[in-house]
Structure formats: structure tokens, C-alpha cells
Length: 115
Image (tube, rainbow, N blue to C red; front, side, top):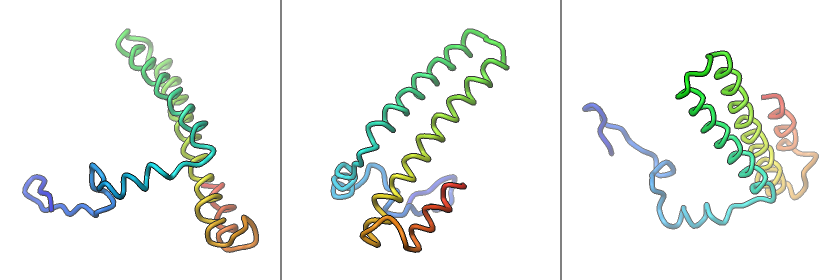
């Protein structure tokens, strides 16, 4: 149990940092075909964010900054959406049913597209 400002805080084991060795090993082995493409998107967003920080340091107009921050936010949201859909497809649907269609999880997959 940790303490913050005198209040006790309990951290669930899944949120421990750094993760336990067995958890870390399992996390390393969890890679999908889409992960390299998602990683590429995130690296591009990271570089874009670094450029926005430089723009801010150079006192660029707020409208330009807002536009560029919106682009970074959109890139990250798209990467997150792809990761979630890929996880649903490969980890939830196929493991639970053996096939990607015709199950409650298949319905769930369809619904998540609208989030």
C-alpha cells in the first residue's frame, strides 16, 4: 500500500510498475501482425508532437498550435482504435469462438467500431 498526501492508496497488482518479471515476459510475447504498423504511427505522432513543442518555443500563433495538436491527437486516436480492433479480433473473438463471426463477441466487435 502506498501513501499520497497522507491517504492510503492501494495499487492493484496489474498496475505495478515496473511489472513483475513473469508479467513483463508475458507482455513481451504478446505481439500482433499490426503492432509494427501501429508503432510506426506512434513514432510519427511522437515526432509530430516534438515539432509542436518546438513551434510553441518559437512563439508560433495559437491557431497553428491548436491545428497541429489536433493532428497529433487524431493520429494517436487512430493508432489506439487500430490496436483495440486488432485485439478484439485476435485475442477476444478468435480465442473465445474459434472463428471471427457469429458470436456475442462478434457483435461486441461491431459495436466497438462506433465508440
